[in-house]
Structure formats: structure tokens, C-alpha cells
Length: 118
Image 1 (cartoon, rainbow, N blue to C red):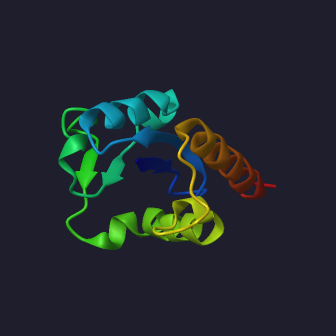
Image 2: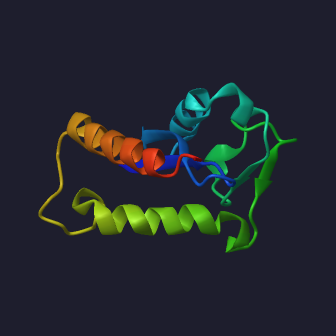
């Protein structure tokens, strides 16, 4: 199970997420969940093949180096630190995808709420 995230570079808020395998199908699920204004913006990704054919090539900027994806990598570390369910070899994992999704949804809601502009 993989957690796919879309993060706003300006506000660092999570604008969409999807749970699934590392296939193009899950990449499409994430793309459909993005708000329309984000679907028109530049998309910085890692070099994973599943993004091709999902993100329009004119907007897709695969990162040859980690510099453009540093914020999402940092957020992934935050998730692992704060949610025991996402740590490998942990006793606090959930076998239910529904419960995992609910836990991530609650965490992201609280995380985004604390980052709203004043």
C-alpha cells in the first residue's frame, strides 16, 4: 500500500492524496482528486514512470535531483514520525485500508488546518 500525496509548494498544505499500489491507476486517482486549479499548474514529481500519461507533459517536471521534491520528502518524514501506522515493522499498523484511510484523512485535515493563512 502506497500513499500518494499532492502538496502545494506555497502553503505546504496537502491538496489531495490517494492510497493504492504504485501503478498508473493510483496516479490517475490522485490526479482526479486534485482541485481544478492545481490540475492547471506545474507538477514536480520524482522520476516514477506511472506519472507519464496521467499528468499532461506540458505541466510535468520530473525531478532529476531531489531539490524540487524536498518539501514532499520532508512531509513524508513528518507523517512517519507522527503516525505509527506508516512506520515499517510497527505494531501499530492497520490491516484495514478503510481504517488507514480514515486515520490519514484525520491527520491531513488537522495538518492543513494548522497551516491555513491568517
